[in-house]
Amino acid sequence: MKIILVSRIDEKGALQYTKDLAGTLASWGHEVCFDISTAQALGCEGSTFPGSGAGIAVIVGGDGSILYAVQKMERQIPVLGINWGEVGFLADIEPSEAEKFLMRLDEDFPVERRMRISLLKEGNFIGNALNEALIVTSRPAKMLRFEVIIDGVPAERFRADGLLISTPTGSTAYAMSAGGPIVDPRIEGVVLVPLAPYLMSSRPHVISTDRTLEIRLESSKPSKLVIDGQLTFEFEDAGSYIVKKASEPAIFVDAKKNFFEKVDRKLRR
Image (cartoon, rainbow, N blue to C red):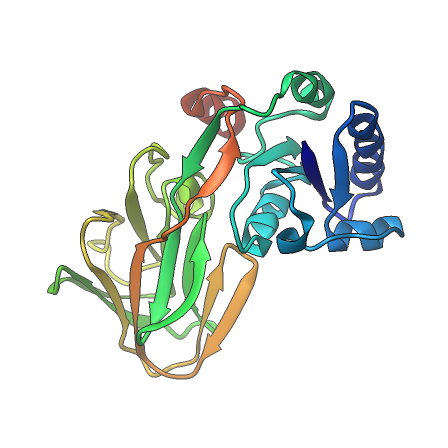
């Protein structure tokens, strides 16, 4: 099996662990390579995701490292996260159990598919998000005005500092901190969470991906669109965003870790 390894590069411990893991995997007969950023940090040759030909990506880091890797993939391959972060909700394996888990992993390993969302502005594709897209004001203390249109029908209009457009996977991330619900990742829906809305009546919504969802930014004020904390776009004017289910989901190695047990263990401690 060919494996591409990705490490967070701001932690020497994570880099050393990744380097040691590469040696272990190679000794088991696997073909191993590093992604470009990890290779540069280790001072060796690396590979892009499209050019690696890997069948699985093993990522040593927190949720940000996993989101980074998913964004870099032109074609999604299975991801296994080894937690080297604070919470690491997307990382199912702890460093102490990784070698034992990988030793038992064969070519027919089970996977779990996680829905992503695609965002288009004025009909032009911008990007895909596994966790969330954030539309936020670029000028502190200046609110934005939003209109939510579902199946062509205006559903809500409000003023707020911003709007989080989250997947169920992202419901345990920024959206939860902003007051949104925890959503079972097996549900295919979009979570809308206004950030600091002017009116208390502006509440989070969960919208089925079977519906047509349009977000109209009515304020002609500078704003930013941030996708998974990885991609940032700046806009100077109002506009319309279409949000829909992405054609290709993210793929995770199924480590048999129950979602609700993880919620209890990682978010309620």
